[in-house]
Length: 153
Ligand code: 4NP
Image 1 (spheres, rainbow, N blue to C red):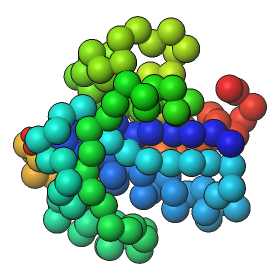
Image 2: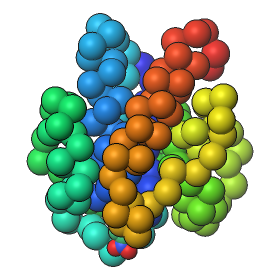
Image 3: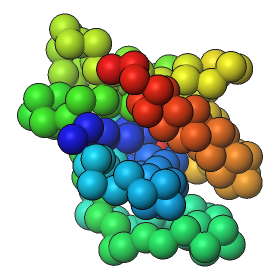
Image 4: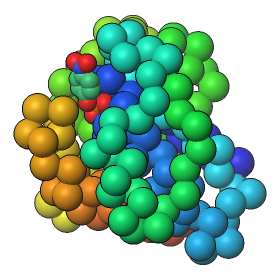
């Protein structure tokens, strides 16, 4: 089983969107049993809070199911418990490394680095544009799943 933790700053906009999109993708492809998927934030600012309304709206529009979400801050233990720690933008990667120390096992990556156009996913908390976030995350999740299923470790 491959264990994946998606990480953003607050764990209310981008990383839960990635969590539920990726869960839906693996379910649709009959791969559900092969993956454990969760999300977390690098800040405790929103801890305990539900997803942002804008994220829920995009998931609803695209018929992607989600459960009750409670934001949480990622911990050092998460580094041991997951195989892939996937940040949304470069500043997430920096913050993740602050929490975990060194990435000795090369687990920490940026989502859109799996695509042909590596870039950050802008924070919709600031931009207000959840549609661009949704399109970026769909592109990243598809590329990441192709990578994982192509025999790469
Ligand atoms: P996210 O967006 O990292 O995509 O969940 C944010 C949500 C909340 C805050 C920042 C970013 N905040 O500062 O509370």
